[in-house]
Length: 242
Image (cartoon, rainbow, N blue to C red; front, side, top):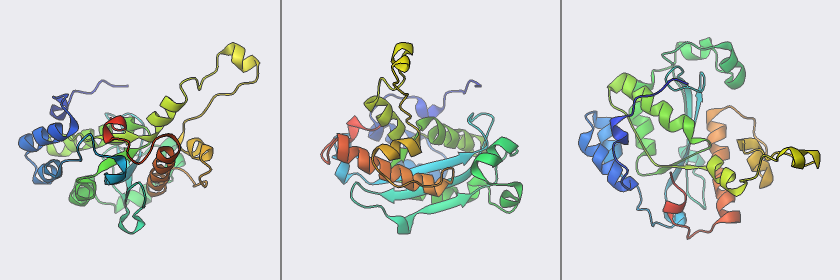
């Protein structure tokens, strides 16, 4: 994977509220500035008080320096309620070409993106939907770096934000998920932490994968289940976000 330059938004290791305040002071684009100024909850906020937003991107590949976002799904929620009425889904026109492998996965074709807006055209709505909330993703190596690269490409300034990663939670819960050769001989199987397999462990319903809005909803439900089974409503945000 190509090496990415470090964004100016990554310049501090301060707690997230301070990091976002620092970014707000540095931001030039008014949409980014408004997003950063909205801030985020304090690290000691109980998770049941935290406004959350599940976020999922479909992309043309896995490397943010060589691939691009083609669709965005987001679902606002709290620990007790998923706000489907306020869910959003966009197909956006990538600045990098589609390839057949990615089309096979997410089903978004050239005809779907021909009339789609560029990401910058929906950026104000996207940032407004994220503002003041903590993003919840399944595999943090996608949404945060892809959005950062996309904005640096267009605005010449990037973005950073706290995330709760449901895949990272599953990895923490299953540290020995890959059995050694002796355990495999004894019949032990690997534990998958993919989104669909993780949901199955909590008896959540199966959803067809690789649609940004559906995957965002699936991620929101997965976090609710993880908190119910392994944490509690008073768990402080600092124990969950990255």
